[in-house]
Length: 93
Image (cartoon, rainbow, N blue to C red; front, side):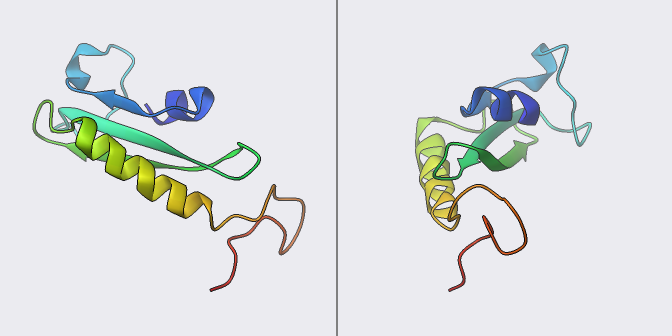
């Protein structure tokens, strides 16, 4: 799901990962997952937030909205595309 999230630059929310033949689980007990992209100001993927649950359908629209808001806050830390040492890194606070 992480790769798909990064490729599509879109949140992936899966109620039942066991129904996906291509799903690669980090744990054999995982039943649901949400993955949210963190995009820098240029739209480049800098990270993904990957949350798993042992409960099926553990994530809903409210969880998605909150995680996407967090991803936007994280994205704001990036100044731009990485071009060299010190460039594109998170801004100092």
